[in-house]
View (spheres, rainbow, N blue to C red):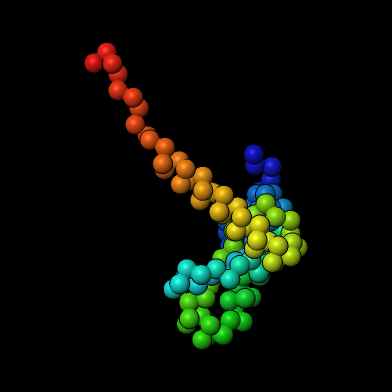
Length: 117
């Protein structure tokens, strides 16, 4: 449901959800696929992108060369959640989704044959 929209500085339309939703800023390694966890949970997509850019701008070149990057992800966590707690809760959610996907993959997708044929 689109409640309101506003044009952002980059020309994209932002909904109220973009302003009020929580976003996690996550650090990960593109070479090893290792996650360093959630660094912060903030309110609003614009703030999350701004904070991520600050992290990228202050990142040491050797750190970046080793493969460390940042991304934002919409989250159901409350803005200001402790990063360690946010990391733990995010990992539990990811593990749950993976388990569900594995169970679904083991379930046969084939319908029983029609005995009338």
